Length: 525
Image (cartoon, rainbow, N blue to C red; front, side, top):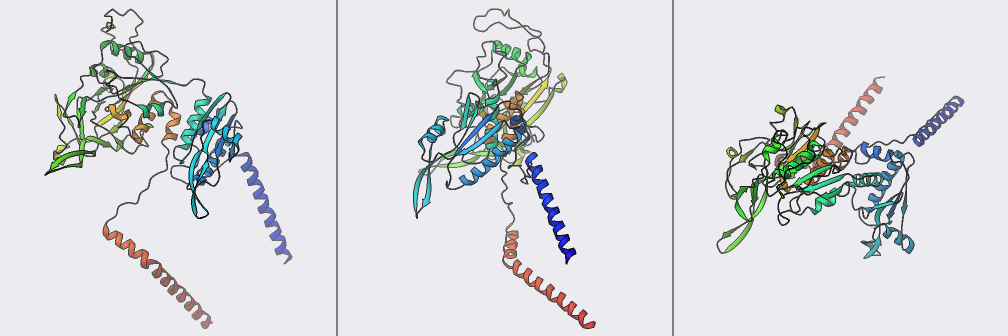
């Protein structure tokens, strides 16, 4: 008995020592296990690196009201855990606090000074629905800089929002992204949604292609040009690229709009010879794909006008992406509109490297000609889609040579005077260009969430801010149940109904047999 007591005491002391050691290590070295497939509950490497490189104090004030309805309590717990992770990896530079403004006027004024407004919530109390006031925002203070996330309604992209905000307020200079196009102001499409998304991480500025592009512009976005590029405009783009500027061009070969006309005609952009110089090109075509979206079309049926959804192959839904490239590896599907192909066959012959980003399905084709007839009611078969995985967006990298190296600079279009300024015939270092065959990808009314993600990823990669791409693409994975045949559904239903009962009966039989065998063995003794 004494030996047993001594052993028990020794085991208890030993176990206590282990617990003390583990807690000591836990205090000194932060660690956490995240078993989710997308690591939803742990910080990405980019977030850790960004917060670890902060040089001064960041104060985070989370204005969160308690006892809010629905998912808000779990959002608050998630936010607490996330801010604790940021604090642990900041080497003491980030501190946070949770504040409940309640009905204290001073705290409410403080929250509102950070542009965090009070919100109205419906809660059930005393057997009736009441409307209460609450806060769900977070403010960040870094020196004299203050920014906030006014309200948090879900945890998706929350890490991206926080990390990009931290990077933005701790960076001395925000990269400049120029945006431009061709055509009149009436022809240029609105891109408010894209501007808002890009404006969080870039200083977005309009660029006039008729003027020399400032070398301080880190990247140039050329969106849906609708008029031919002049030689002078191409020269300004060329010299921007040769001097180290990066460009992302999104454009269609055909002008098309099914609700205005059922004929698509080429834009005549005067662009392909220019692009071919850099080892890439825009296909003189419009892609038709069996994997497509629907369009609502009206038809007359007797005395009635009926609107019905019709599968429209000129609205391809892209589901084939380059899985190895950081821009597209986490994308699922993107809707495109009257897109053209991208020619990547020229790069190798010029000593450049090209890489496709997204492709058509394995049932597609390219329509060409002086016009393309957009018949939404045309019946198509598999034989109408003989091509597979046509490139629709691509990148090219290389040490480029000027398109005007042999001919020399053109005359200025406006004053027709000869150009006497600086001219560079060849780049000093490798550069990169992205081409997408659909100019609608960033336009309001067309852009979807995945399309916006593609645009942001491409611009981050272009300007070499790749650290945010992995965070932005990290989302809660959707795992819908697989569709199974009706026979399998019935089998599963019957198994769920009778399976537990059968298992209990089998377990009882097994136990009965075990006891019977033991009883026989004892009687034999």
